[in-house]
Amino acid sequence: MVPVTEPDWLDEQEMDTWLQIVRVLTRLPYALDAQLVRDAGLRHFDFQVLTQLSQAPARTLRMHELAAQVSASSSRIAHVVDRLEGHGWVHREPCAEDGRFTNATLTDEGWRKVVETAPGHVATVRRLVIDTMSREELAQVGSIGRRILQALDSPPPDARPTGTRRSR
Amino acid sequence: MVPVTEPDWLDEQEMDTWLQIVRVLTRLPYALDAQLVRDAGLRHFDFQVLTQLSQAPARTLRMHELAAQVSASSSRIAHVVDRLEGHGWVHREPCAEDGRFTNATLTDEGWRKVVETAPGHVATVRRLVIDTMSREELAQVGSIGRRILQALDSPPPDARPTGTRRSR
DNA sequence: CCCAGGTATTTGAAGCGTCAACTGATCGCC
DNA sequence: GGCGATCAGTTGACGCTTCAAATACCTGGG
Image 1 (cartoon, rainbow over the protein chains, first blue to last red):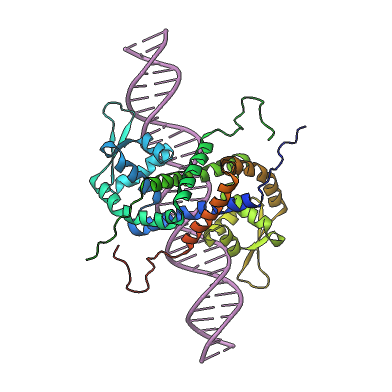
Image 2 (tube, rainbow over the protein chains, first blue to last red):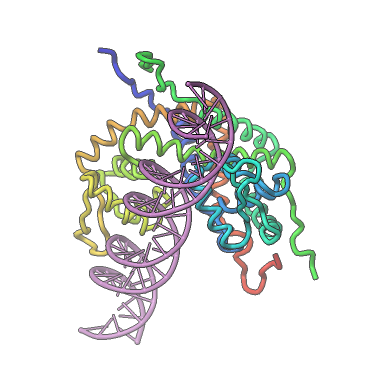
């Protein structure tokens, strides 16, 4: 019987870095939400949705495109767009050419909301994140982020092609 | 009237890095949860709670200490410990010396759960994060993480010392 | 022309986190 | 010694996310 998984533990430095990351993962989203809720009555996720629409041609995207751009499930997007539509910031309309699609469009009111909310949000992002780094660090973090996203996209080596589970 | 807030926009590189960070912030927690739920029926946050207890003297912490160590509100901790207690992984007991405190203790069963869950989780953390970085990058990310946490702890310059609210 | 299969989206229920209100217990001050 | 202040913790309601199931529409094959 093969030794299933030698723990392959994190050494001190690895553990320390991981700890910082977990803390940032926990607290940063909370802080972003807090600022936006306080200043604009908006969650960070909602703001991302509005922003994506504001940058799309004709301020319009199909639901599944929108979902992909903010890494959300279609169900989450459906609920969120419900809410945003309720506020009058987004308008939903079935696609004329292909009835399977639904187009979400940013309304003028939604556009105004984005414009008036953005500066405060950017200032927060600067203060909490961007301004804590030098130019070189900025580039490096960008690059590391891309690698992590790539790892997230690759299937775990666990998605075995039958009986090829590596014993690590 | 003072020019309210010059937008101070993010340049291309800053925006790119921020985008990567937002994506990681969105997707990494989801992936960590997914692995733990799949392999151990546990959310990442629950695992953090169990881990903190497992490392504490006598595997015991007061509720508010536990909360602080995982950056959670006391209310969240109360709910989570309810759940964990329901699984028999944690035991709650009012502190004998000072009736205001409640001690949360990791049970033997909880200890076993941590021990059997940890290797798979560590492997995931390695694959998704740690192994995407060189040693130097690891140190740098740790340091940047610390700076971001520090920024999260400092009050926004907006916490005005009376009548000094900047005009936004 | 109609049906099987695939894709896009919505819906509703269940679970978790947040917030505000509340209970209990200790401390300090007169 | 009693009373307000403060701190620890719990509770319940509400909102958001997830998950699974349902709907709606198109496409290709017989």
